[in-house]
Length: 123
Image (cartoon, rainbow, N blue to C red; front, side):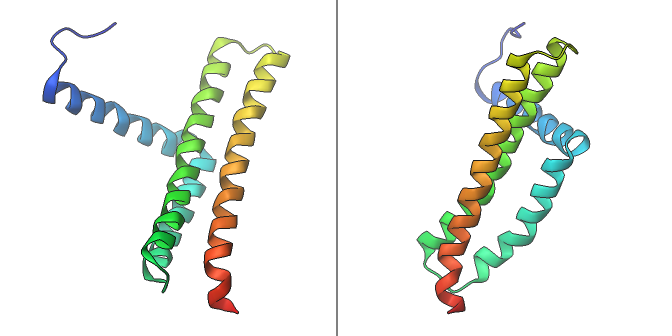
């Protein structure tokens, strides 16, 4: 149900609070999110310190955030599917598999981007 008088700064503060609750829930309940967040926090300084162009730094950082965003969406899909029913159903499995494939593709993009940016520095 939509709260009354929810506009302007009040809406922004409420939305931010819900977003923080979502991040906390993902950290508490999703091992993959914890692993990817820790990895992103370790990789972020590398992206900032490596001697590459600003655009390349932004691409490296963008792909780190993309992995986290896609993992959050994957976790949301899994939670909704699990909430609907404990029954094993082909459509439920398909939804979870497709969301997992999105995470896989974001990880591939991240690896490819980092590889293409850093490979010339290593050669």
